Structures are given as C-alpha cells and as structure tokens.
Image 1 (cartoon, rainbow, N blue to C red):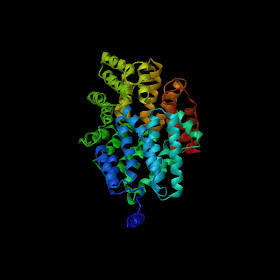
Image 2: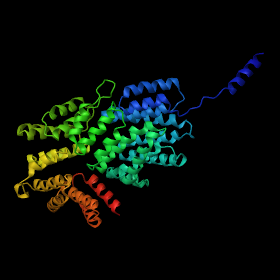
Image 3: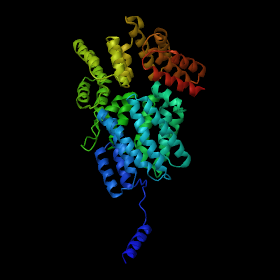
Image 4: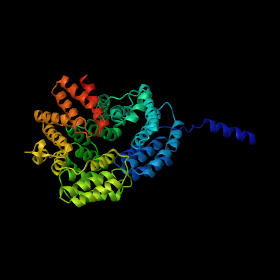
Length: 492
C-alpha cells in the first residue's frame, strides 16, 4: 500500500509542469527599468525585489540589478559603490548562464553586464580588464544579432560600442584592436538614429530613453558640434518630463554645446523629490552654466558639489572654476587660494582634473581671454567677441596668450558661421603654436578641416586633418586626433 502511494506521488510530480528559469521582461520589470532610467533607483529596487519574490525563476531582475548599480555609480562615482559593483558581476553572470539559452535576452543580458562593467572600468583606467569585457560584450551582441536579427535592443549596445570606440584612451583602444574590434563613429551613430526612429512603435519602446542617453552623450562628447543640440532637444521630448535623466541629458548638452541659458532653465526645473537618486553633478553643471554667463552666484553651486559629492572626480576642476570666478572679479588673493587647492585636493584620474592641474601650472590666465572662453562656451558669441575686439596678437606678451587669442577669435567666428575670418585666425594659431604643448594649434587645424569639409573642399580638409594628427604631445591629444581621424574617414 505504501509502495503504491509513493509510486502515485512520483508519477504526479513527473506530470506536473517543471519550473524552468526564464527571461520575462514583464510589466513589473518594465516599470522597474523605467524607474532606473528616470533615476528613481530606490523605487526600482523595491519593484525588482517584489518581482524576485513573485517570479523567482525570472532572470530579468538580475539584469536590472546590474542596471541599478551601474546608474548608481554614474551618479555617485563613489569607490565603495564601484567595489560592490565589481563584486556582483560573477554572481549575476552565473545566475543568467543557468537560464534559457534560446531566449534573445540570454546573450543580451550577459553582454549588458559585461559592457556596463567595462565602461565603468575604463573610467577607472583598468584598461586590461575593460578590454576583455568589451570583447566579450561585443562578441555576445554580434552572435545574438545573427540569431535574432529583429531583436532591437542588440542595436542599442552595438551602435554605442561602434560610436565610442574612437574616443577611448589609447591604452584601451590598442587592447581592443588586439581583439580585432574596430569602431566607426558614423556607423554607430547611424545605427542608433535608426533605432531611435523604430523603438517608439515597437514592442521594445521601453528601451527608448537608454538609447537616447547613449546617443546624446556621443553627439555631445565625441562629435561635439553645436548644431547637435537641436537634435538632442528634439529626441528627448518623448522622455517623461519627470525623468531626472532627461534633465541631465539636456543640461549636459547645453553646457557642452553652447546653450548655457537653456541648460540653466532645464536645471531649474529638475525634479527634487526624495525618491530620486542624489546627483551632485547637477550642482556642478549648474555652476558651469552660470560661469559661462559670468554669474558670480556659480560659486555656491560649485561649493554644493564639493560638499555633496561622494566621489573623487572633478575636485581639482571644481576648485579651478572657483579660482576663475575670483580672477574675474579681480580678487588675485582669492584666485591663488583656490589654485593651491587645485594642487593639493582631489586626484589625477579624471581627464578634467588632469587638465585643471596643467592649467594652473601654465600660469595666471589673461582675464579677457578667460571671459571670452567662458562666454563662447556658453553660446554668448557677441559678448565673447566684445571682450577681444580691437586687440591683436602683439597686445599679449605671453606666447601662450598670443596663441590662445588667435584660437579664441577663430572659434568665436567659427561658431558665428563667419568662416573666412575663422580660418584666418586659426592659421595664425597654428603658425604660433604648432610646436607648443597647448591644444590651440591642433584644435585650430581640426576646426579648419571641418570648415573645409563642410564647404566640400576635401583636398584642403584632408591637409588640415592630417596636420592636426601630426601635432603631438599637446593637451587633449587623444580626443583631437580621434576627431581628425574620423574626418579623414568621412572624406575618404
């Protein structure tokens, strides 16, 4: 009798549906993901935890855990957060590797975890490990694209890798080249643009915000043309106005692409409810946008950043901005006090901090040139020009200031679409500065190449792009050289 009962029990268990691991990007997961993209990270954590309890076999929450940690690290830049993020990788990878290999989310999830950690490692200059993870992610995405060509999320990450490859630091680029990874900014941008058009009407529409985030950063930091700002504003219209990520994208693009007043408007409307992640960098951006309008109240925003920031990046750079504010108002002693903090506080891992230290070691800036730079960066071209009109190279006694004067005049005229005047000043900057450690000459050659390319004079464009690449051992060498190489690709 006992044997018969046991037999029936085993038979019943065998006939019951087996619980398999699965990838179910269901409504709860979509909601959690959307909260991550809005930078409501604690809300997302609660939703992810609920999904794990409700559906313990679903692997998507483990991918979302990685997203939470990645965006938390972007907003905090804290070393403890970074250490925990790295430690979590293997557990999440092993969990996902047990899942359904026939799902399009299988390789995608593995690739995203590798990619997000690789991007974080590259910021910390851990280039060897970053290159291994980039290679894994790239291979996984390519394989997934072959298996599932209609799975649109593949294109988001593949497009991003393609577009940013050329902007990687030299050490990382060389390591990736050894794996056979080649990037092309135009190809990556085109892939992302096509995806931005397709996503809203697709079943993957929830990936729109993340795609726009990567696209906007590429347009701002890599292509870096002021005309890109209008594109960014247009495509971010579809992002929820209560998204803090939307505020960041628009404000960041505004400060970088000559629209500081619009950046300030976006920042003034930023959501501040406690369920949003703390994001001190927005205080830094507010200070930067105000400084680009020569507004002395920027000091309070920079001080807020220094107080609230949990990381070590942009400390030197922030003290440099505060030093410039003192110089602009004629306080030489205050300028020197902040210069001493540039030299002693923070670290040298972030490019802007490295450059901040160089700036103070170059000596005291010329106040008119400094004002022209800041106003021009913020899109105040007429005011910037007014700082320098009536002056000539001989009015400046320091060689660096002579070179910068010609570059600044060229850049202001360039941004004002007065290209003949721009080319004249750019050439003067090249002649004076081609053997100096400053970026002005190489940038002037790059910008001249871009002007000639726009006017379809490809012979002259090639000459100036090549000239820009030939200049070595100057500030921002990697980014300027990569942009010149992209220019050569376009005209060839």
